[in-house]
Image 1 (spheres, rainbow, N blue to C red):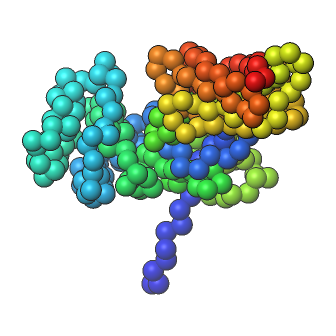
Image 2: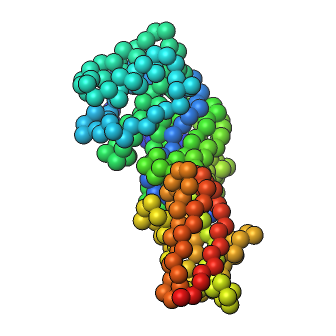
Length: 295
């Protein structure tokens, strides 16, 4: 009898895009946050059997570990998180602590699944982008992603850009995987196309508006609108664009806001440079117009 390679079945597939521009987003993390018991049981079993990917423990910088929302953590998981970020505990000791947690019979598989996700999220870094794990994947250069061999049931997917700080909001989508004996192919004409064309839209933190002459009210071309706290900037154009109810000739898309206020510097040749502060939260799309005074 000849050996045949197992054919993987694409169950869910889709694309992550910028909700404002429609452009594809590469490197977005798509993870399964809710799933049938059968899926969670398999993930926990594999974790107990094989442990965590080696890349989680190699060349890891713990200074970048964020604090998860502790109200969602059980006391045992909270304790593990504190030990995880303790520089006095070696990587080997942390691995043993995780094995103890994942093997704790007082926790059910859902609790272990949530704890596993929080731990993986905490260790997110440049070194493990594209680390293979059953409950998460990353979008490719054209924004596409897929999951294979998922059992039937209800799923919730969450997309985010964990390394982009406050530039984008997270988004989620719910989808049902029904029972079927047919393999799901990447054919958009099949009855399964709704699960092969999932669209996850991330809202970018955005500032847009017009830069005009304070006296003539004419549009100023080649004005520089820059975020004072970092290198994000945009150049104004001589054309006015319309986006819904907004009109703009400059646009800063997916910028990184500062807290509590973001400081903008606006400059153009022949005009007095201005500074403005704006209250901006992740995912906000705000219009802010500037009137520059000629020198």
